[in-house]
Image 1 (cartoon, rainbow, N blue to C red):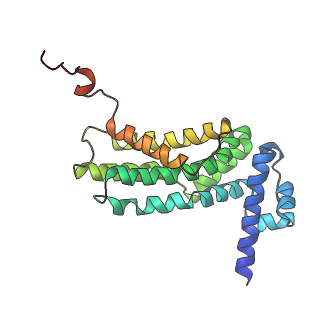
Image 2 (image 1 turned 90 degrees about the vertical axis):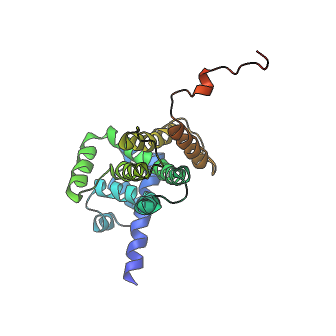
Length: 215
């Protein structure tokens, strides 16, 4: 029975941290305030997390779990369904996770000491923040070899544009106080993928006017 209790306390601490971060900001996010908000002793926080940096990273990892699961299965989708469908599903899941973690990641730049601690923790645990870009780039390269993606695109650049664009949108949605509707991630994913697959250069039909009948 001990493990469920520990997991429950851990989740309470993460939820309390998110709540305080969103309501009071990073400046007031002390371990004492987190413990008080979670209804546990301050020592309990250090039982679950080495420090505040580890706590914040744990929240990010947890809120990114659905996206990580999606990425882990992406190599199995090479040659399956359509590239458009696969990318839309990835980006829709990505945006949901990015919207959750954007306030946490952006707030770190307000505390250089905490940011340095987070960077140190990332290095120690061998974390790869660029993992999503690498996985999507590898997927695009594999589809490219099958002839399902244009040969002249650069897979990593395309992946960086799509994944990075989602995070950019998440940040601005928070900045502008825009509500996240159920349909918003799907619509955004569809628009992004349609644009990525279509490209920016005009088609012949866009540049050549249709000749009038009988001309």
